[in-house]
Amino acid sequence: MKLNLLPFFLIATFGFSQTKKPDSLKLFFDNAKHSITDVHKSQIAAFFKGIKVEEVRQIRIKGYTDFVGNHVYNNKLSKKRAKAAYTYVTSNYQFTAIAQQGLGELDDQSPEASFEEGNSKHRKVDVILSYEKPKDVYVSLTRKQRYLKQLPKLSVGEKLRVQHTNFYISTPNITKASEEDIEGIVKILKGYPKISVLIEGHVCCGDKKEYESNVASEANLTLSTERAKNIYLELIKYGIKKSRLSYKGFGFTRPLDFPESTVKIQQENRRVELKVLKN
Image 1 (spheres, rainbow, N blue to C red):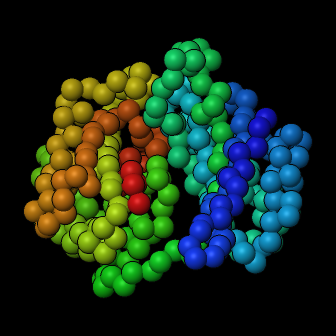
Image 2 (image 1 turned 120 degrees about the vertical axis):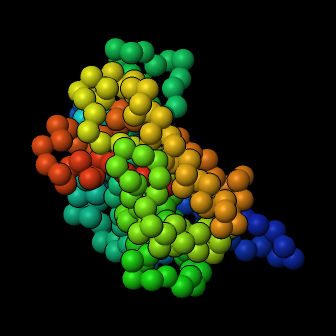
């Protein structure tokens, strides 16, 4: 295993000043595994050696899987990998600002991947250190919109679920009660003009065949795409540039849980998410 340590760079002006760039470590896992091994522990020890705790502003731990297996399984596996790394790091190192997230499958494919064996480079956890304090921008949000403050803090590839946006049953039409959510997203995107997002649409109440095959039915694909598109159009109507937005529907290929044995699970699967493409 090779450590990916980003060096410090000297920036020349009239003299020299040191700017610290984020350091990162990749921990790779065997297929279907999530436990921290002795090899991982050695890598983590080498990675943190010499790092001054007080200089680290934030640690982000992000778990991933490849495409082998269904989306529900991979989503849970990525969370287990992130949690295992988080638990080990927090048990052995005294960092305060540390967060974990399971991001499921990495979307991009590569020539070396096979249907049976997947892609070993995607079965990983990224441990990312940031030395730069995030710049806070004041955005006036209502109590219902406050969760949207998380969006500027996400790394590229991370997602935020839009919590209060709903649609009329079996239609792509946004309900009146969703306007506050849309307005909040607009406020955040205007306050942070470098952020670009992909609006992802997902539906609930599909069948096992659809999510296991990862092929959306025509009806569910259309509905999820149209719902994501309508939010895209609403954001444009409020003045967000098209170049910062894109949308995509996934039908019922990426439920968070299955089977949908409760109304709560159905509600969680029937969702719109904002995936950060640029920040």
